[in-house]
Length: 105
Image (cartoon, rainbow, N blue to C red; front, side, top):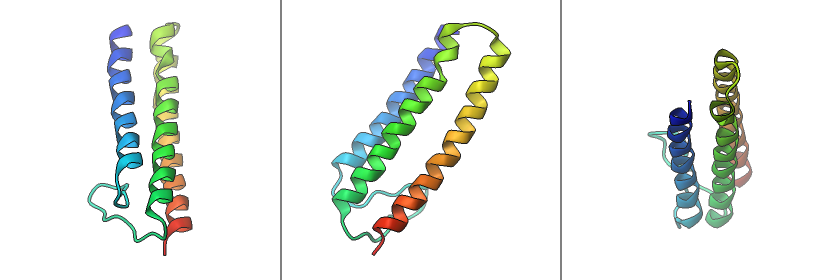
């Protein structure tokens, strides 16, 4: 199970990379694959908000992966991880929609 946590941490680092890209770019970032970036009032504030969102999502994912290291009931760990990931992904999309609506021109 510790090997699975290492892979899980690689996903965490990838999402942190997405957050870093959001913080550093001068163009409005896009969220959904294939979608164009929205037309926003203040690009820096928008990108910062989206970067914070991705960073928070990465931290939640890393916390959801802790049952892989802690052991215990494997089936319960997988249920927590799967349901937590689905729920946090839905919250991520809803939060982005809210951020976009606040920053849109």
